[in-house]
Amino acid sequence: MSDMLPDPPERQALLSVRDLAVHIRTDAGLARILDGVSFDLPPGGTLGVVGESGCGKSTLLRAILGILPKGAMVPSGQVLFQGEDILRKPVRGRIGFIPQDPFRSLNPVFRAGDQLLEGMRRHAPGTRDDHRKKLISLFNAVQLPDAHNALDKYPHEFSGGQRQRLLIAAALACDPDLVVADEPTTALDVTTQREILALLRGLTAERNMALLFVTHDFGVLSAVCEDVAVLYAGRVAELGPTGNVLADPRHPYARMLLACHPDRATDLIGIPGTVPAATAQPPGCRFHPRCPIARPSCARSVPEAVRIFDGSRVACPFHADALPEVALV
Image 1 (tube, rainbow, N blue to C red):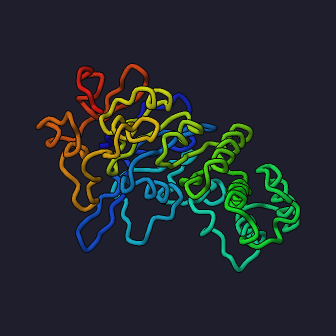
Image 2 (image 1 turned 90 degrees about the vertical axis):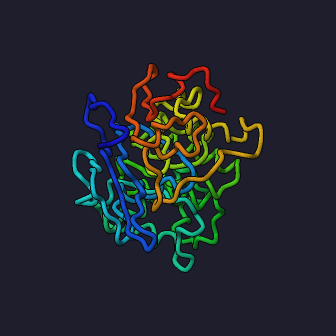
Image 3 (image 1 turned 45 degrees about the vertical axis):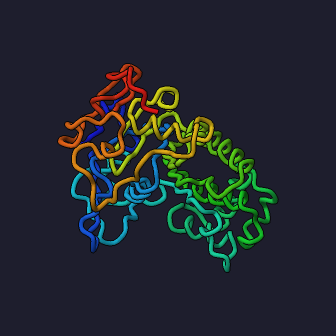
């Protein structure tokens, strides 16, 4: 069973992840990358996924996009997109993707237009001339300078921020209902990052697209996402409205992770310990070896998610509501 099953939605979710597990066999043993992940994303909604490196964020995106690595197994769960299980029948065109690194995501020896038009040729109706006109219109929408001539330029002729705008335009080219973004501002400077985030926020609202945004930065999260899922070692630790989670995180991991943000950190120590290897996950609550309020029972059973007063769900029986006198950070 999932450790974080959301309530039945009042309307059908655009994207519904249910009890998703992803395992990979390695020389070191079975790697349990994801284990019982569940959440809903409504049409036009924005959900951020945050957590340390090694918590399964990229694998979650790969499962949704239908590009899991060879040898990956899905022993349980579903990924429902518009009611269809896309684990069994991947979709193309209806989900846009914005990759992390704008410098490595475009082939330097081909013109930008040739690369972007290829995806439209496969998944969008219309002629090549129709596609060129639409891309130029999207370049204007994402505020790319000299939009009319951009198709004929090579990737090296664009700055980092301009390349990211190209990739955002490419993600929108087939009119998707959902855009998946994998830390798309990590490689950009602070000023450009702010511009890209404002652009994404405006485009998703204008086009009523849902956005699934993976990041390690709570500041970025607060600028874009209505809701947040805090992922730890392949499980959802806390899920709820972004404002509530940022103002008063309830899971010990969420609280300690937020305390590491530069605006809140009082030292450079961070969270003691490391994320466990996927081949050597601890029993029970996977955070208990690093948790300051862990009890013996935490190592014996997987915690069920509990709903708290603000609508969030927390997978910890000793969360901050239950132990208000315990300082977690």
